[in-house]
Amino acid sequence: MSGHLIAAVPLTRAAFQPFGDVIDDTGPTVFPTNEGTALRIHELGVADCQAEGGRTLFSIFRMKQPSLPDTIRLMERHPLSSQAFVPLGNVRFVALVARAGTRPRAGDLHAFVTDGRQGVNYRRGTWHHPLIALDPGDFLVVDRAGPGAAFTQDYEEVPLAEAPRLVLDAASASSPQN
Image 1 (cartoon, rainbow, N blue to C red):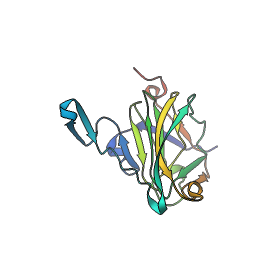
Image 2 (cartoon, rainbow, N blue to C red):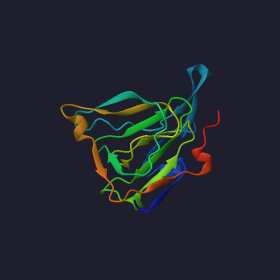
Image 3 (cartoon, helix red, strand yellow):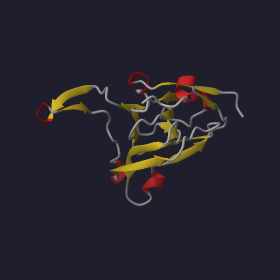
Image 4 (cartoon, rainbow, N blue to C red):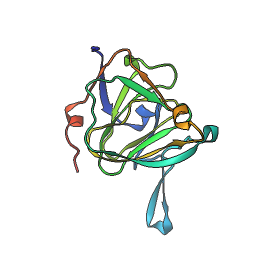
């Protein structure tokens, strides 16, 4: 086991910008709609799924229990599309990422803890860990489907040479506040 630790920090729009979009109710543009009965929090992210004949899918991931791993052993990416995870309720998770490009190493990883209402949209090619839920619950997932063996064309998984540990602060590790 490696001695490398990855400190998880709170998710913010500015800190996460190199990896994708934060999807929450503090979006960049807000305006009234439906004759003033609603506010539209506009353009929180862009689903980038059309490469090579792809189409955008909406799915639900149901996390039956928290899924915090002891060590980080692998990372994945989608070279043809973005992928979004949006909690459907107050469900916290960790977005563990590395910049798009060459195969990531332990020192390249960044971890962000959501507040339970925030989602993320990973940019095309961004390395990320499979969903790390801190609470059980459902997530809306927006990603790509395409012709032929499109899933295998748009999915790459690599083991890490080191297996760093993810460190959460006490506030992140405790249950969400409702």
